[in-house]
Image: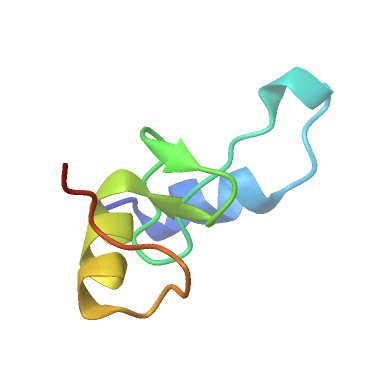
Length: 61
């Protein structure tokens, strides 16, 4: 989990656009981030398994 200082720092407007850090809104994680859902992969699995994201379900084939 990210510290409060890291989260606040990532919310500031960066000097250059390439320095933008996108973080998960639940835990603050920056790696494994999915833009479409604004979540990291770990939180995404938790939320989807609860059925909170409409239109997404576990695949099976």
